[in-house]
Length: 360
Image (tube, rainbow, N blue to C red):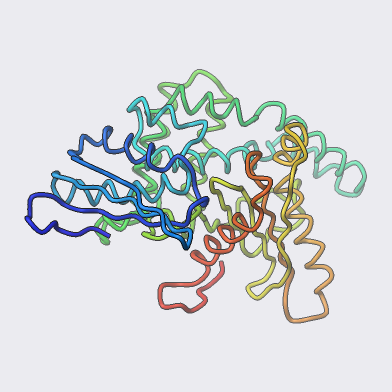
């Protein structure tokens, strides 16, 4: 909440949340105040017996600047500190652009390097041999994991942060409520051409090019997001699944959702508009197990949903499944992660009037 102070000399902002639902929040807010050049003359925290913490800030800056700060604070609550945070701390990208880059980074890790034309030709020649097709798919997946690692993608983001900024601006044009309605649109041909031209000019590495092609694909396939919602505890993106590769996955799902937060990462896959299935919480005993779970997360989710779809073939509801991989430092907070998972998923399934919208 933002209120004018009694004497009219400063603006008071209060932010409340349940303790333990995020971390490093005050330090993140202070960093954002410094980066935005705001004048905050005091700030303090009040802890209540019901588990709620309220942070209060007193600004002498203008209302528009403070409202912009509030928009970004919501993103810092969802993703307070990540591998990409140095881009924000160093002033290369805004908090909003870094949060966008984090989500797009996860998308790229799971969906980069779809089958090339050579692989498609080989798959067509092996269409009658299911065993050979499975081996080909497995080989392609291993090659992808070896090349498009999370570390390699992050390196590309750091090296080409100016392109990340262009991609974020393109994303914001389509989804930001501050963009005039008449200008909101999907990636226009002109915008795409400008980004591709910049990529051609600045990128010598073919791997980097494929990474940023996938980031551009992310902008194209996002149908709905809570990125700019005032109240959110994790980021959710409803994706158009038409980009699915028939070699890796036998059938494109009806609905695909990517969810990321400070305590988890996850997906939800459904094969019909009306579908049912559970959510699997995935824990990791150590860092090695966590790394393996990260690699297999989406494939496991897809296979679970596809199996559920087969089980539900004789009933009206289709099959769906969700997966929620707990972050390595949050193995003991599955209930919190589950609440954040469900809350963020519902934010892109139910419209503002409280009715279920088209799940596609």
